[in-house]
Length: 410
Ligand code: SF4
Image 1 (spheres, rainbow, N blue to C red):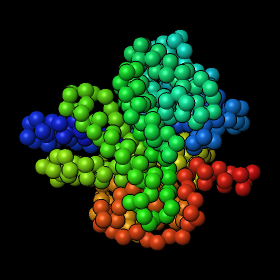
Image 2: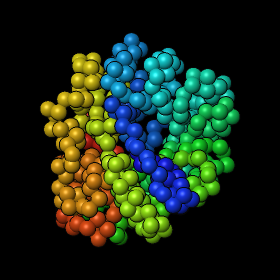
Image 3: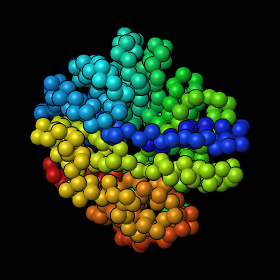
């Protein structure tokens, strides 16, 4: 996750005081765990990485198993659990799970589509003490309902945002940008302000483009740059005004170097301080400080790696699975610097970005260490040349690749 507002607040502080603040990256012992507790969902969204449907899935972790895993996670130094799905509120024991998580001292987040949250449920969520609730909104009403394949989904999710804000829950909007909803981004940012949400999570689609050439002409990459510039501008305006709303992004760690470009344009006097700061952040953390456990208890380097199974918590504790580098992917993800190839290996920002989201390279080429085809920075900007790659002219997004693979395997 790239914390845009945090850096903007530091830059605002630097502008006010003349000194870039001393900030230590707080490194927890264990990773943040995104835990897909249930695969069932009342929606069937177009871009769902869990490929969920509205029926029960057999073999999901039971409550006692969840508690056992939680004890292990606590002992391993995991600081935060993001309870997700499917739709996590469909799990009848979700509040027993969250209560135990809070009791053990985890930062506890809930990632939901929001459509099930009425006023009483919002009050219950507030009482349960979740640290944060993220609600997915993929555009304004027409766009969102189309994405979510449900008329009225937008109204229900927006009502959830309002109910949660009313009960004082820290609530944020989660937005995954595609070519079909990019036009709604400015209005969604305004909606965030109007509805009292405190956070905006911008998720890049796991998009691989047409290989590695013509990045400067690729429509998705250009739209991404526009979106990031908009987020940077908003976050900077908020930071200067002392507003504590948070803008964060995920699934494309080229955001770090791109922020550096923004700073070079707008606040060049802080470029070197920010370079140092972003290097300490260190970029992509999949397999290191971000982990995923799926509904069946299988562990993955992050939520985009469901096709790569590291082991099941029913067979071995998470802590043992996570530290096991006999898996070549995990060995590479934990290596520093990572064994990336091509233009990522020659990129002047490798220490900041850490080679980005490896799953795109793996999905497009079969080689997880190939340069990231989803990087939206140009060769000139990164100071390294792209490797020509033969890929079909059709643009690729991670989920479409996964869906076709699942269809093959069905
Ligand atoms: S070229 Fe690779 S290492 Fe450099 S910014 Fe892009 S993804 Fe990151």
